[in-house]
Image (cartoon, rainbow, N blue to C red):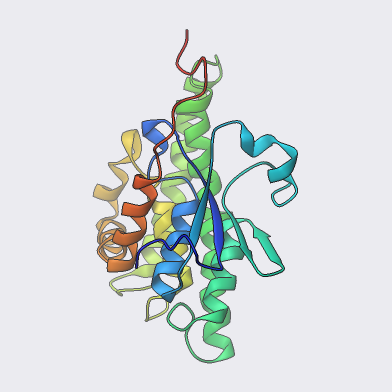
Length: 229
């Protein structure tokens, strides 16, 4: 499904991010959900800096992406957007209230239990790597990441998806597992079931379409002063 400039759904994304962030910006999660659901959408691309301006803060109070707009509904936070998409289109939530609740619980587990430790690692190794506390913190953060991935691997076991069939919970968990790389890449050697799980998600045609569109959107230029010493 191609991005449709006339679609009633509009999401926001950045028109430029540094190379290390490409494939990790959270609009990818929303694009993937829209592709799985078969919903057309258009993208409003924000030059770096404009996300902090009043016009965008009116729809995203923290000055981030993505946002989702359709008719008189505006949403922010990728988890809320993905669950909204899943609730209105077949394929991302299983049948039955209990199964749907379990799928939603994995969305929150990805965002609240797994992602915070991976974000801590990114802060220590990228965003604040030049701070004196960064290097000493890394072993403790790595230990917490290892613990959480070990627990996730134990729960997944040898099953294909977390609750039997692919759902929004798997989408969000696999999107978060995209953050496992660099110095943490060996974690997938320790937990090969998670490596295979992520590869299954990445092999889905909807993910491939979303990833391609995500990368194609980076047509802007870095803000003035980016990369200056």
